[in-house]
Amino acid sequence: MAELTHLDEQGNARMVDVGAKAETPRVAIAEGRIRMSQPALAAIRDGTVSKGDVFAAARIAGIMAAKKTADLIPLCHPLALTSVTVDFAFRDDAVQVTAQAALTGRTGVEMEAMTAASIALLTIYDMAKAVDKGMVIDGLRLIEKRGGKSGHWQAAD
Image 1 (spheres, one colour):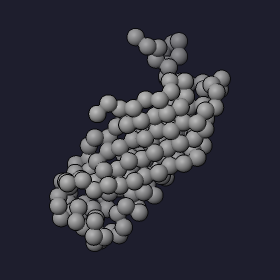
Image 2 (cartoon, helix red, strand yellow):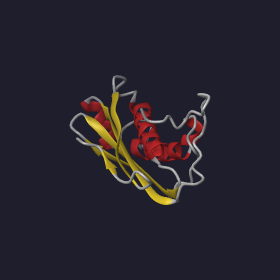
Image 3 (cartoon, one colour):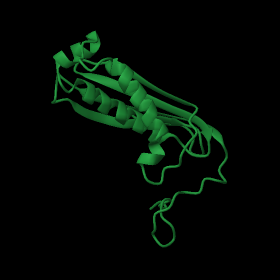
């Protein structure tokens, strides 16, 4: 079994010391989707959701969430992100969210990308719940990471 890096010799939780690691460019991409009714999809597509521009709010929320990941997830390092993007695509019965986080640093940005996608999805739910309370968020996952000691990794579809 691999060593549990977030536990010390006594089994206590700890933040991993990344001070000796080399600074390298790192990128992570995460995705998820929110399935919904056709009326909800149409309202988002047509810009008729009563709360306003769903994608603008979700994009800002996702970016803000990536910047706050260390405040939300215990033992995550606060990171100086150089870029966060949140993009949206319509699917037959869903909106797909793709979030990318990047930096040059000593630790990866997977959690920041995942947090950005998660909060963007939750914001879509909040913005459109008056149209469809039965929306379902699923498929949240890391799809790619680049950089660092372990190099490039991509999800197998």
